Amino acid sequence: MVPVNEAIGIVLQHSPKPDCESVALSDALGRVLAEDIVADSDLPPFDRAQMDGYAVCAADVATVPARLRIVGESAAGSGWHQEMKEGEAVRIMTGAPVPVGADAVQQVELTRDVDSGSVVEILEPVETGRSIVRQAAEIKAGETVLQAGDEISAAMIATLASFGYARVKVGRRPRVAVMATGSELVDVDKRPGADQIRDSNNYTIAAYATIAGATVERLSLAGDDTEQLKQQIADAAKRSDVLVTSGGVSMGVYDFTKAALKELGAEIFFERVALRPGKPTVFARLGKTLVLGLPGNPVSVSVTFNLFARTALRAMQGAKKPGLIAETAVLARAVKGSIERESYLPAVLRTDEMGTLLVEPLQWGGSSDFVAFARATALINVPTGVKTIEASQAVRIVRLPGSTL
Ligand code: AMP
Ligand code: MG
Image (tube, rainbow, N blue to C red; front, top):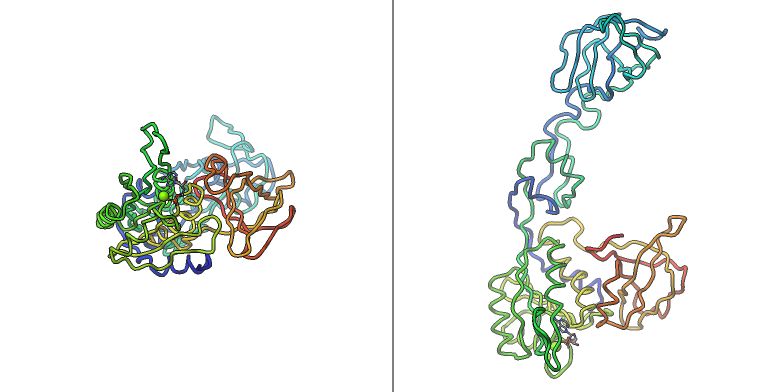
């Protein structure tokens, strides 16, 4: 059995370097940047008014009310490009350039137009620099504003757009093939016969793979038959960068996935991980295709996919931090660990009235209990050898991708 961290290290070591491609900005959300993003202009590009009001010279309005002659108007997109002199004011709008000669903007609420709009009365003094954002105060041209390896969030889109990145270089999406194995499985649109169950793993894996940035092909269900498995695996490997199978990796008489992989000549990197749930997880390479052979139980699938397959998929796109990020939360109820294995136990996160992040282990019936797992938003990580962690202790958690909070 390899420890979880070691297994993740092995996955990273064998994940190929990202290929990149250029995509339109409108398709860039969620992709991983393959280039640094550099400002092509100062921000703001000129001294910019932050309020609607009057551009003034602060010294002119030290004593109020002060009357100033309105000599022009500076609007967003259409500035006033003469020099403002003593005793003068320019009507100005939010986002417009501040004229030369002005050193402050007084907001319109603290002014009053007189003489049918040719003169403004400034009702309150204003300090130098007020309501002006100076050119380059936010960003200087040439500065790196986002880095290769960052995942493009909705909040980053404005940055890309503002510096002219109509197209962006990103990591190519890995092609994932998903294949559930098990002679008991029928497709979701079928009614299970005697001794049969509906396949859920193909859909779960497809969902998590999509969240991880992959394009997904769901393959037809494979029975527990080494020859059939060999054929379907070989076929799938030709069409995908990563093949994710579920089922058939335990010690049962009909667990043939590993045998099929070995007979096809796959290189097996690990086949048992000191992990609960998810011990029989297999990681291999067949030709150029990475293969993750996940256990069959639906909860084990969710845990092992997110620890190993997701990490590979994100690394293949060039993500800076491809693995799940560990955080700390306070345990709401005691959990039990395992002597030999590291545990990742389904849990729900919430905050208490003081803002402390609490994590509550789910009441669940084990790794087949996908109905209980449906509520999970996080996994509690109990280190190997720890028997119990009591309530109120701080624990390591990872958030479950695709769930909120
Ligand atoms: P296995 O690892 O093949 O022994 O499967 C372990 C358990 O998971 C068995 O109870 C299977 O019926 C169940 N299982 C396997 N594959 C799937 C699947 N695709 N969808 C739902 N349950 C599955
Ligand atoms: Mg099976």
